[in-house]
Image (tube, rainbow, N blue to C red; front, side):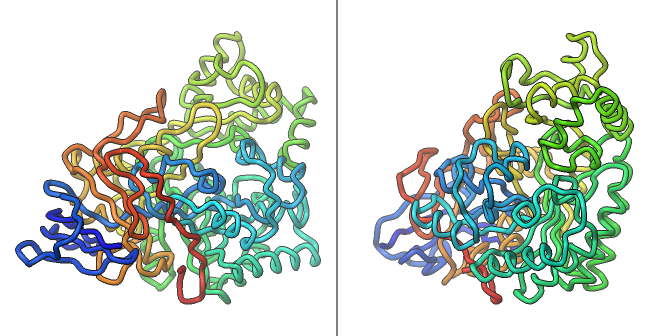
Length: 520
């Protein structure tokens, strides 16, 4: 099949200025980039006059592990052509016992039991449904740990650690692109440094990648960044710092220090990168706010402690002591039992006032009432810090997105229109050509996604056509699932998946299996 994207303004992902021209697509790849004025072949053409033609966006930090199997369109509609799933220590393999994995919390709440032991099982399931876009997958440490040793808060035995190493090695052999941690998420948070170093050394043998949701983003964020850098230096594996930010007004001043640490590490040869989403709020389980000791045994252990009034009071007190923002900044987005609509969109402070209660105690009560399944949207950053992170040369743009029941975060539906519309076009934080590097070429280089991320002859035809003057979204925290605006066309592997905001029915995505020379 041949098709010509004609007369567009090409931003090719190299960082160079936009150039007028046409792109010839043949047999799933870019056959030629034709400058304006040069003779174009006579064949079916799509007129891109007045629009930007860019490499498809690569979401380096996604939680769409099941969504890509289910065929949900929220990412491709905003121009994403490749996702990296399995972040923050959570992956759909190795699944192990479903009852055990349900203790990991709400990340798996809306996912059916897929019984995947290896990355090979995951890729096979993906390929059997033919995804809308391309998918690479990390192996999650919490999944490994839960499979090998359950939810215990202790170091692994030698046999348990050997099992984790074998599982990781097999997943990497099957094509997993690397290993992710979520070091303030149970049971990954129970891991000590030696356990992580040994697992990251497995990555080095495969030339694979380590991505980390760090141990802290608040009062100990500097120590958390130092731990991540030390882990990379001692293991020899590359490290990607996930969704970089500093949480809460009390801690905002630490951002400059952690960026200085990253710059210093890169200058002495550490293979380090970062990603971030263009929003001032994040989303997570409320369990993440609690002290680590109370999470031993998973949700079952936590809920047992919450039935003890002295322990419940201690948990509430210690949670309050470690808050870097306020309970007015913490909005309930989902609960696991009754009264969901009555609570969604209300801050913990508002709920506490309605109950005539103290906010920290209300937070703990909500977890007790809803079997530990309470998701929140946390307003925790400021625009000055967001600008510093997004404009940093080592930062790639990500969604950190996940579709679940309840009130989703708008980043799941509108990250790239928000970044390119508000922050690039309206606020002028960076030139468009630099922004496109952050959405495409930089992520592709970072994770060795061969033949993707730039517009060049011989590369895969992953392309997005958008109106730079109109790209935006009305998606917000009250109505997150509003569709993006200004996306004219999305092409994945040479097939048009989105045209004028509508799906075409094409499902040309592939599983990108990692090899020591890159993902193919």
